[in-house]
Image (cartoon, rainbow, N blue to C red; front, side):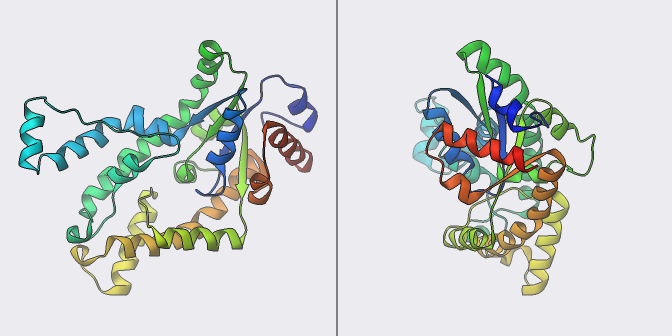
Amino acid sequence: MFYQNPQSWNSTKAKKVLLFGMSGLGKTHVSNILREGGDWFHYSVDYRIGTRYMGEHIVDNFKAEAMRNPFLADLLRSDSIYIASNITFNNLSPLSTYMGKPGNPDLGGIPFAEYQRRQEQHRQAEIAALLDTVPFIDRAKDLYGYDNFVCDSGGSICEVVNPNDKDDPVLTALSENLLMVWIEGDEDHADKLAARFDKAPKPMYFGADFLETLWTDFRNENNLSEAEVDPNSFMRWANRRTLAHRLPIYRAMAQNWGVTVTADDVSAINNAEDFERMIGRALDAT
């Protein structure tokens, strides 16, 4: 680990951490608190994906939709209007919209083959954005004067790494430069996350093999062709299985590469000092 004990963490003037875990457990919330305190640089992996690596795909998708409208199509062809993504740390909807959901196009779905293509784009982008964390540590210091650095990773980090491979290139690069911190939720948190997702199913990234299994099982259980799948029904069904699928991977990441804090501890953080004390306790418990 980048910090071996509470003493090394408390004594350093340049604290560097990466937060990982299920979406909705506080990664961005606590990162915002640290950034707003003025002494921490906030690097968002999802924002990096949606700007540096998939921004062009996102905007092209907007344009394709606009070209279906004759009025907007004429304006686009004459360069009379400009279409751009307004993605932010707290609003990743442009990225989610591009990722889409597979299934019946009349219900907002896209063909499964196209969904797989976009999923692969996201996989490559996520790996690149995670590896970009390391040069951004130097960039934050050299350009902006930040010593402290927090990487706010996406919930799907566990889909692009192998925590049981001691030579995993992504985890090796990250753990050599930051403290890996898992935000662990309990069953109550999982139920709340699932219930929230059920109300508003969102696009998400799945590992390729896991996605194939989910898609096949869902269609077989419901005796559906690809074009008959309700995209939201599939995403709700898949999300609950994804929560269970990712938990042991997160746990292995924490056991082999970092430390663990609880979602309840994170929810109690009000400032950077609270956060630093929480990390110190987590290091003391390892």
